[in-house]
Amino acid sequence: MFSIQGPRGRLCDRSSRRELLTIGGSTLLGLSLTDLLRLEAAGETSRAQPVGFGRADSVVLVYLQGSPSHIDLWDPKPDAPLEIRGEFKPIATNTPGLFLGEVLPKLAQQSQHFTVVRSIGVDPKGLRNHGAAIYMMLTGHDPTNFSPTGLAQPPSRNDLPSLGANIARYRPAERDSFSNVALCGPVLEGKESGVAQSAGLLGPAYDPYRVYDDPTRPIQLTGFSLPADMPLERLVSRVDLRRKLDESFAELRQRHTSFDAHYDCALALVQSSRAIGAFHLESEKPELRERYGMTKFGQSLLLARRLIEAGTRFVQVTWPARSDDEPMPGPDGSWDTHRNNFPMLREHRCPIFDHSLSGFLEDMAARGLLQRTLVVAVGEFGRSPKIGAPTTDNVGPGGRDHWPECYSFLIAGGGTQPGQIYGQSDRHGGWPKLDPVHPYDLVATIFHSLGIDPRTEYYDTLRRPRQLVQRGKPLLGLF
Image (tube, rainbow, N blue to C red):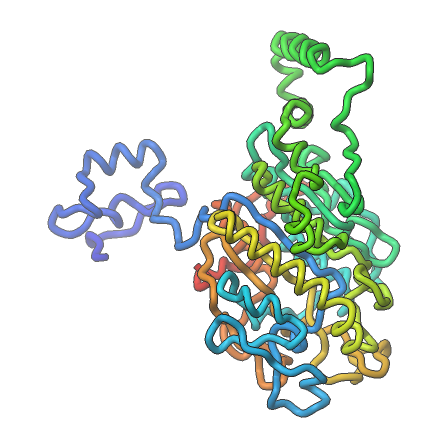
């Protein structure tokens, strides 16, 4: 576009009027000067939003704490030496040129719904442990709440808000729906629970509603049932009386806006059969529940789908094992395979993950929910390319150590283009080779998809300005 010659002026953070008018009195996109002034007055003269902005109405973050091996699941290296490529062979998918590890056969048949990003990585801030990487991934900021030895500190109201909390603040759900829900299990690092999951300094109104019950059994919701002597009509009357009193004390009400919003939302949820009804998984057909898998992880994904249908804005489904637990047999064991990586993945972790996530994507697509729901499946980092070669002193036979420098994630829906491979790692899966991605770029992409500018500023408890994402830009090539 050619601009009239002259110095550039700014209209707040928008393009200047001089930049928008083209040479010779012709107009941009058919707008007259009168139209331009009218739009400017309405705050609508900003440049067209980048591709993908606001394409999603909701987000499901499938957070695989403990971190699966990217080489064995998403980015096989069949031409690498045996001590790199490992025991698994690559298998073809429905996407031409995309191969996954043989332990993901069902996801391979659903690849037309997702893209694999193979070039995310970071030079870790602090120790190469789970906690620091978790904090970066789930807040979009460098870690601050860790001891000098790298141990997580208990969550506090001085913490920076989590991804879900910021979404709840800047794009809340409708009044009778949940804005921020955490399912399956808490984020666990060492002895601390809920690392990088709370709203921190934003206050409890933006904390996630936590449901960590085993959804293979009936879920007992807390906080959404009334005492026997308190019928709903009586509660509503009390709230109406309280609201009228508040209106008589406008200044006092101003000081408690956050609490009032929280209170009103809670009442709306008590009254909402749609929101609360999402938790009644027994209403689903048995064969569909089996397609998701009758495990804690599988049924949590089914609950996530039902919550999205009920208008929930953000759902985090966290793999139920502690990030740094010793991997154990069974459906809920850890991804932290410092030893026995291959039998654990082949026999325990991947059959559950493959079955359940593929069922979730298939069901979301069939219902038309993927169009407006962004789905991301990611761990806090990857695993070391060389098997049994310690980057710390904590690797045993057949194991892979922590590897934040390069790993992979799955992304689907929410306006992203499916059936792609984004980025490339080097021949051993150790470093990004093409289109490197920082974890903060992923966080920025999630905000961007929801129509939230990741550069939005707020103030921390010391009145310092903070952006929603410390740095990084949305991955526009995914849209």
